[in-house]
Amino acid sequence: MVTQRIENARSTPAVSTLVSKALNDLASLKCLAPLTSIFCKGSGEFGRHIESSLNQMTKEQSILKLKLRKSDAAVVIGVDQYQAILDMKQHYAELVEKVRELELTQAMSEYDHLFQHIASPASRQATDALFEVSEEELNNAYKG
Image (cartoon, rainbow, N blue to C red; front, side, top):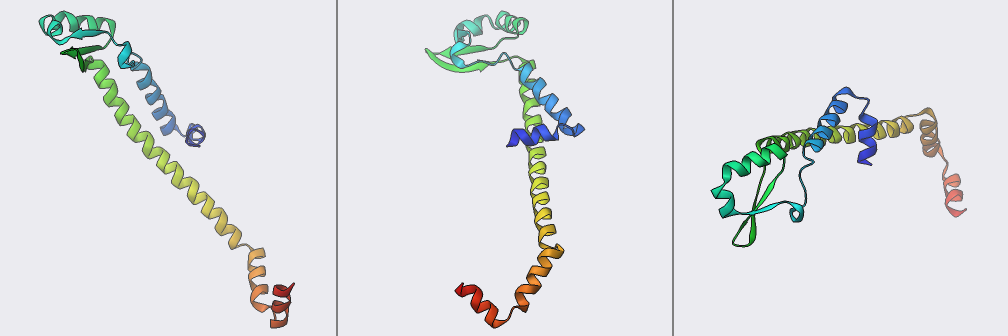
C-alpha cells in the first residue's frame, strides 16, 4: 500500500526528487554486505598497518570487519560510506514525512467523499422521510 502511494506521488516533483535521492543513496551503499561476507582482519594487524589498510579500503570502496580476541568487534567504513549513510538517514526522514502527508491527504479525501455523500440531496430526502414517518409506518417497518 505504501509502495502504491509512493508510485502515485512520483508525479509530484518534490517526491520524485526525494525518491531519486534515496535510490542514489542505496546505490552508493552497495558495498554494504552481511557480516559473514566482509573481509576480516585482527585488530592488532589493522592497528600496525592502519594507513595501508585505510588506503586499500578507500581504493577498493570496501569495508572491513575487525576482530578482537577472536570475536567480531567493529566494522570500519570509509568517510564516503559514512556520509552516504548520513544522507540516507536524512532522505529516509523526509520520505517518512512525505508518506505521512500522503496518508493524511488520502484520509481527508475519503472523509470529503463521505461528507459529500451524507450532504447530498438524496441523503437529505432520506433523513427528512425518516423523521416524517408516522407511528404506524414505523411499527410496520419493524414488524415486517
